Image 1 (cartoon, rainbow, N blue to C red):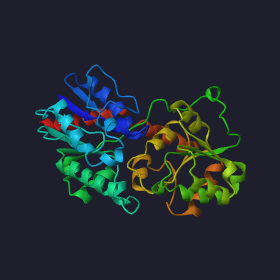
Image 2: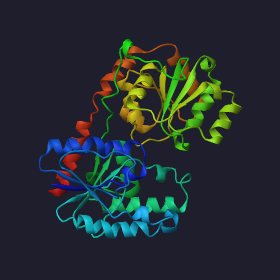
Image 3: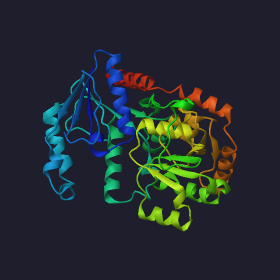
Image 4: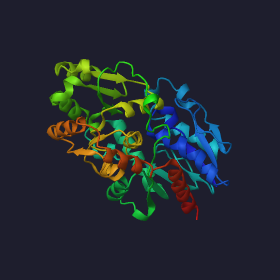
Length: 372
């Protein structure tokens, strides 16, 4: 079985869940089935490490992106040239499977096609993604889904959404849950380390802060929360932008917000283990790996009531309505009163039901099915 993976995500993102998926499952699939050979195709310029295994063969394209400068002037021509050189490198795909990391189609491909849909953010929040590039992305994504022999979604919620939006038959869409790293676990007291810049009990927020992440509701709730004066809000992600810093300063909570960038899994594990709670206020998610990370570390979870979070975390979190600042304040007050050890134990048990081995096995089943 030959699977060609377009590794474009390793060239365009410095970190993120998508690259983690392929880093985790490709070596496992090779271990499960000796007949599998991956061809991992990139342009050579990488922002992340590639998955490694003797049967993951790396193949580099002609470096179109690095030669056509400035990139914006060549934006319409670059994908066309990349496809031409791509076909020269990987052939027509007869008897093989094409599985892109991020919605690309090979020119003149005669083999099977599998595509993974991570979320429908651009479709559900089109008013936030309304530029020409966004329209082009949606169009390309739609074409990939419609031409695929099988569609993998990372949650059942997304599976149903793809069916409703694109009309793809449910029999051709396969829900394959993700997992989190084994680095996330409950630490003994003597394993916990001092955390730089954190001097008080703290709430933990992990990830981006774009609109659908609903960060503004968290900020408003933290500002109104009576216990905020005795706590810190720790953000794992990019540095505050000018608008965020201005907002926090106006609310007089800037000095109680600590931002940690480029955080390793080991440090993130320390944060989950020592936080009062992990807060997950999103309006929408395709899956939610941070939920599994928090539960695996025995960290209480406060989360917005959205379908994917309920699918992944069941009844473990303290829920609030996504747009209700008052409900979030109430949930924070509840969790600040002390750990609910029953919820923590249920969270640990539920997190163990997700594994990268299972993700890899289910993905391999999809490959086998499309080749039958």
